[in-house]
Length: 216
Image 1 (cartoon, one colour):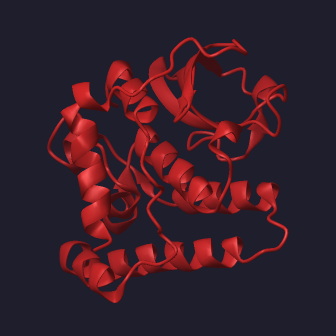
Image 2 (tube, rainbow, N blue to C red):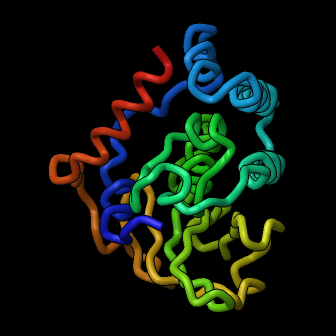
């Protein structure tokens, strides 16, 4: 899993338009197939189709969006970055995660975050949350959904794949939560950090470049 400081900067620097994954071109899918094979292309295409289907619902149903997106990314095989990409830290785009059918907890959280924001969900309802998985004594990432700013969050996770209120996840010890709008300490209702750190984090620029290039 990537270093916490880098992941915090990653989401705090999110200041670009959400890539339109509902409109992945045939040329982009052909590049996915060249890199990951026909099965990788099928997974990415199925994901795009799912986003289109969910995005066409009027009015949108947050509960269904959460469930469908959580289930889709939780189908992906969990694998360490060093084994999957040959490096300790690799920021996979959602297309890379699905195309390769592999990722770790932050890759799943990134994929779920971008899927839901792509569906038009307000980013203020979503926070990437850095936790300690107590049963495994490991740092871990999940996605938290807040129906309202004062609501108890629902947890989208790849360890326990059932979406549950945070109070029912005693196995997780929250540390930080963050999204494109700021950073919160655990159990804090007020942001403690705001700002754009992308200039100090070349890796974020590289990831944004990858996401843009994938859809050309």
